[in-house]
Image (cartoon, rainbow, N blue to C red):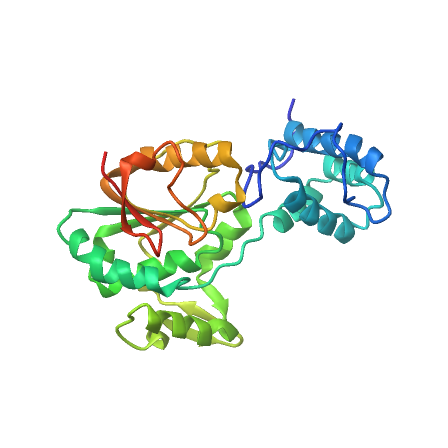
Amino acid sequence: MHYAYPPLSPDRYLLADNNLMPNQNRKHTVIPGGDPAIEAIELPLLLDAMFRCYGYDFRDYAENSFKRRLAKAIRAEGATSLSAFQDLILHRPEAMLRFLDIVTVETTVMFRDPQLYRVLRELIVPELRLLGPLRVWHAGCSTGEEVYSMALLLHEAGLLERTRIYATDVSTQAIEKGKTAVFPLKHMREYTANYQQAGGQTAFSNYYTAKGDSIILRDALRRNIVWAEHNLVTDSSFNEFQVICCRNVLIYFNRSLQDRVHRLLYDSLAVGGLLALGRGETIRFTPCEDRYEGVDLETKLYRKVA
């Protein structure tokens, strides 16, 4: 039975593995100086409680990555044991929300890996011009920096007005932040350099207005974006897309979860559509490997051919 707590949505950027079992030996404890044998019992109980109460299933995720973030959350709450932290999680939904903020943190910047955007601009945009209405999915979009990068690229190509960009993430907080299109002014030098390396056609400052220590992107980049919660591990396909960007997400999943997500992405992509992965990710050794061809292997850009 689920308690009548605010609805939350499970999963996100965590290393996955089937090794969170109480009978295994632990080298590192979550609580400094804690008893590994006790924690080997308490940790599965905590994970089961999170799943049964809120629907977040961290039970198959890699221990090292998860325990580092869990330890940070426990320190932030001032808990002295996993059992004490579980008590907070079960009786204070706001503690669960704070925990999710920690475990779902993801670093992203505008025009991350500028070479990808240059390839898209030079090789893919001419193909997209030959198509009708376009749908682009940014899966695991975090706070939206790469979503707006794509919007800007399509704007400069004259394609944004006939494109609908779907920006999805498991984190409500990330989605809400992304909707604002507000980013720290201190990052603009980095973003400007990335934009220029990506083949930008004008001054990057033309696309935002500065206000105090922040900037807000122009409305032209925001109006064709649909923001929504979506869980890559548990949710299904919801449309067919010409371009899917799922970058620097799969590297945090184990093989079984990667295979599941690859099938989802494959099912969501039109034949001839493009899949963009992160530099540390690959289509090789996946169930869908023979259904793609490499467009640009350096930037991990693939085309669905079957």
